[in-house]
Amino acid sequence: MGSTYAIGLSGMQAAQTALSVSAHNVANAQTAGFKPQQVDYAEQPQGGVSAQVRTAGREGPSLEADFVAQLQAKNAFLANLAVFKAADQTTGQLIDSLA
Image (tube, rainbow, N blue to C red):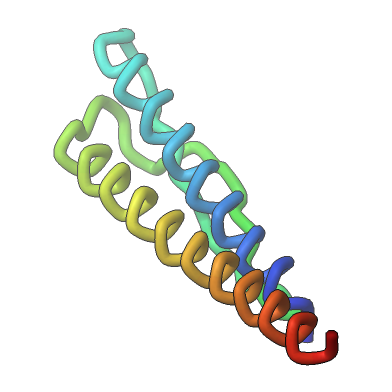
């Protein structure tokens, strides 16, 4: 299993990818023939998650879907940040107890 830091960081990076994809979709919503992107997530063998960007199967904007994706990405980032902070705090307490 990967370190708690690596797992939390992978989640934050995946959330950042999702937010970037959503921003790309919104920015290009008025472009004729634009096919939006979407993010596919995959569990990593050692823990954590990866995010792959691909072209969606639909054409045209879906601003409501992109808005929901932005909210999900924000919440996923904050949840993984909390994991990262908790690991940091636990490590700090462990080091303090050894001193």
